[in-house]
Amino acid sequence: MEPKKQDTASALKDIISHAKEYGFVFPSSEIYDGLQAVYDYGQNGVELKNNLKNVWYKAMTMLNDNVVGLDAAIFMHPLTWKASGHVDSFNDPMIDNKDSKKRYRADTLLEERAAALEDEGKATEAKALMQAMAKGLDAGDLEAVRQLIIDQNIKCPVSGTANWTEVRQFNLMFSTQVGAVSEDASLIYLRPETAQGIFVNFLNVQKTGRMKVPFGIAQIGKAFRNEIVARNFIFRMREFEQMEMQFFVRPGTEMEWYNTWKETRMKFHQAIGLPADSLKFHDHDKLAHYANAAVDIEYKFPFGFKEMEGIHSRTDFDLKAHQELSKKKQQYFDPEINQNYIPYVVETSVGADRLFLAILCNAYTEETTGEGETLKQRVYLNIHPALAPTKVAVLPLVKKDGLAEKAQEITNQLKFAFNTTYDDGGAIGKRYTRQDLIGTPYCVVVDYQTMEDQTVTVRDRNTMTQERISIADLKEKLGYAVSMERIFEKLV
Image (tube, rainbow, N blue to C red; front, side, top):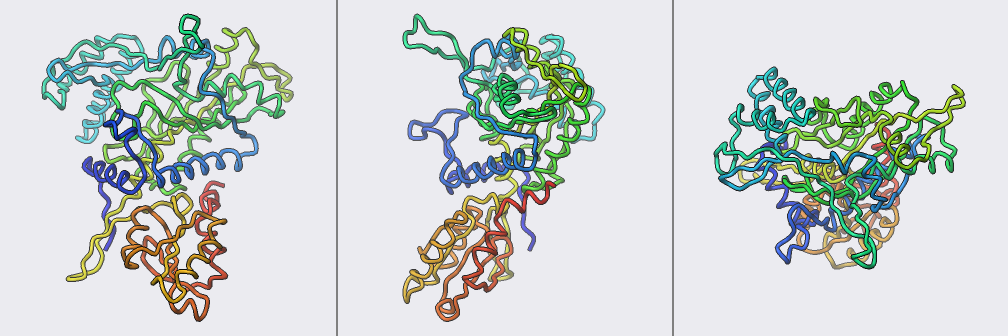
């Protein structure tokens, strides 16, 4: 039978439970009852996340001759965030329900209402609502935003009432002190984004790498935001990881590059296994202060289509702002046109944790197999083989007659090429199930025939079909199947 994919909000509970039970994601400091909106990645989760980061980084830097990497510090001079606009305008509009005492993001309430209108076939009303919200937020008219919530009769899901407070702005940056003595300490921020580390190093990279515009700088790193309303598991957290690339271009060419990167990034998500019908572009109605164009790539999570990656045309806002505040020129001399200018920037920014969640949601599959008395339910993670935490599990049919030793020998031969595990605990069917539940694409079974002809059985996770392969061919055949090259081939 065909696999059954869950597509309701209740599916998220199953995914969260699965993530914890099988070592993907744990609540942080759980023995002390956890910390809201902070999570730890377990032994399988860290492998999957590292694979995602690795494939993103290589797709950016290996497949593009004009994109290089960077690893900037989390702490930056506080004037960085003054220049970027974060000190003055990095805010979220919040509203409280007086009866439930619960706090919500006002824009999220209105976005969810607009999505509901779209589902009801009222696309025109939905668009008008989003435009009215954007107008209010752009003008700083928070009372108009509150009035939209009242006019739409949006109620608190906890109390069921529309008894709302006024809308207020909350700055999302975490601040701390740097210095040995508190009296002498200086205020410093945990970075709310990784992009500024790229901008302040623009000239360092350009000059030392002799880079010519257009060129990009890619970076993976932690960022921190004091999210007032954090929910939906790892979708919105206070400590998270970003994978960003800032692409510096000649002014006037930014829209061409914006459209190029927009299509390139959509192709990437499909190449790593996310289906086209679960992805869509969503153009911004309200542009950030630095952008002249912006679009989100949204994935259909169990809780609806939500942003996973943003592509923004940031103009020259960042470099110009840093030039003005630092009094250091952030200009590039373009020999082709014999002119100095501050480059424009096209940004691609994807949340590593959101991408992880999208892969996990897409991979979680419930399947019914067999008929009649042999009817069985099966759960497995359909993760792209190149991204799977463990690529191959080697299983001796039994632990006697030299089969276990042979299986260990094969494990040792394969583990230098890709992540390989050995398992001899329990019946072979249960061991298959264990590997299915963590997404291992291939199981290699060592049986009595192996001892006679040096062949093994390779079982495919998705189809459960089995193929007899010579031990001598294992590394090459399995290595080909689990290589990131299978993803890169779809990107060029």
